[in-house]
Image (tube, rainbow, N blue to C red; front, side, top):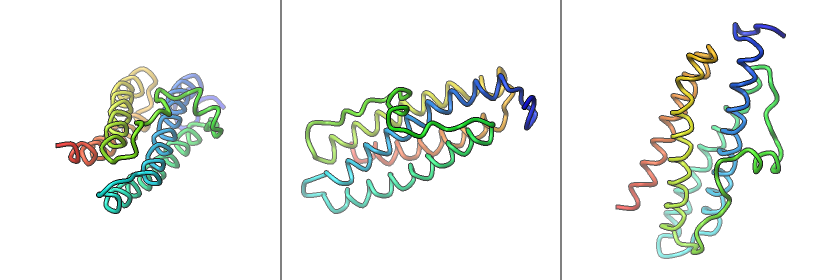
Length: 157
């Protein structure tokens, strides 16, 4: 399978390896956001329960699109909890308290970590691996995470 979609196998594999790390990060963040949705307590419970639901729904769509991008490149997406934990840059740890601000701070830090990872791969995907499609894809994904982070950050002021 040489140059399918005009990208060498070596370059598609390198990009897929990085996208697999991203998929793992997205899955851990999705799970932590679900945890926040399920376990938040306090006087703002109802509004935060709904807010976290919107966030995890958006992350669910991201998960599918990242996995499909890996498949588009001709590789298999990791799909086990063990593989996600082995590949992720994030931790499963979440604040000790079940209040919304503890959850928001933790989730915000994870979004910011993913944004940095995405930003750091835009240029290499385009210029080193000659994969403009994935470079463009992660640029849009970075913008999505920036907006999600803004929504979280807005609760902290």
